[in-house]
Amino acid sequence: MATYTVDPAALPGFAALHGRHYFTDQEYSREELLGLLDLAVALKALYRRRPLTPYLEGRTLAMILSASTRLASMAAR
Image 1 (spheres, rainbow, N blue to C red):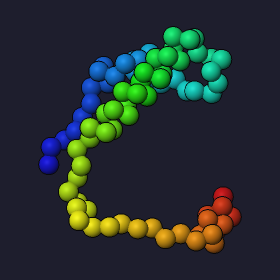
Image 2 (image 1 turned 135 degrees about the horizontal axis):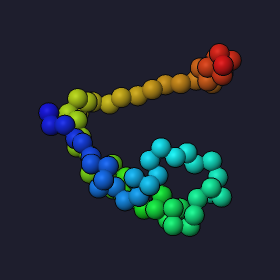
Image 3 (image 1 turned 90 degrees about the vertical axis):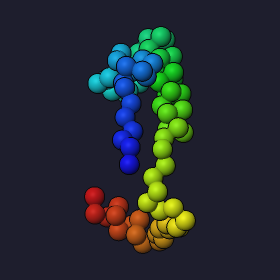
């Protein structure tokens, strides 16, 4: 199976935003926020072009969760 890699330099605005955290829009300039939106659009397009793996072809995967499962995981915190 071929490996699917992406060059971060090909993503718009990635270098400027790499390593930064988003807490509030007040911490970013207008240009940086527009760059963040451009990066989001590029990542979404990249996700849509990803190669599909043949591991579950023709099969259905289901997860059945109940309210008690959610409550149990919340109580464990």
